[in-house]
Image (cartoon, rainbow, N blue to C red):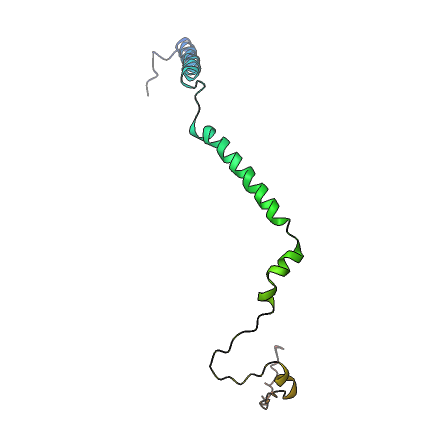
Length: 127
């Protein structure tokens, strides 16, 4: 393999500084272009964000008011539904409710338990 005659330390040095200078020029140009492009424009999120914050505050205030309810008022309003007795469905059943259930308790029949013989114990001792 033949060495490159054009590859000298002076050329490497100048190539490095040219690359570094080009990078700096690009950074400066980007800084000024960004300043021109990003002016004081209002985007949609910022404009609508104020409306959203107002709606959020109204919702939080309404939620706080709904939490501050007197329990006595709730029981007065729900009094009819708390003492509700279900209507007859028209289908026969064997369950007894109320006073009839207290007079005639229903006994469940217990099925006799099947006896299962115990399995013989296995020895794990190696002999």
